[in-house]
Image (tube, rainbow, N blue to C red; front, top):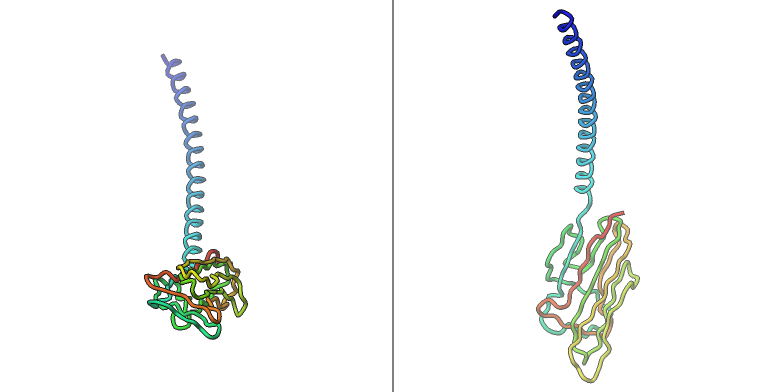
Length: 188
């Protein structure tokens, strides 16, 4: 009987040692997982902070007149007064000029409505340089026309973007059909 008890005790001791080995392995694995989890938490917080620090810039505005605007006798910067949104306040409602708050890639679009009995030419300018154009020749039919254009620009902080109605041009607005919009695509 004593021999059987010793054998049973030896088997129990081996099982206990095996259990202790597995327990140590589990504890090590748990420590590794806790370390990875803590690292993941740090990375998540870092991404949240980066996202918070990114500037949010977007605007959209209509000309805000009812009927024809023009003809203008000199190239004229259009002031879009009916502002739908101006996230980041980069669009200046009193001047019609968008001022880039940060260096980055921006997308701009502009659309117009006109009667073709008058010629219409709109230009997108950056710091005094024409970047894009949209227009309609004068026709004898005088039927209404719509047009527009869009452009992506790499802007430096402080760059100015605006729409110019060319000399001797007319446009028409009502129900917000003549619109200027833009947004920051990617800060650099």
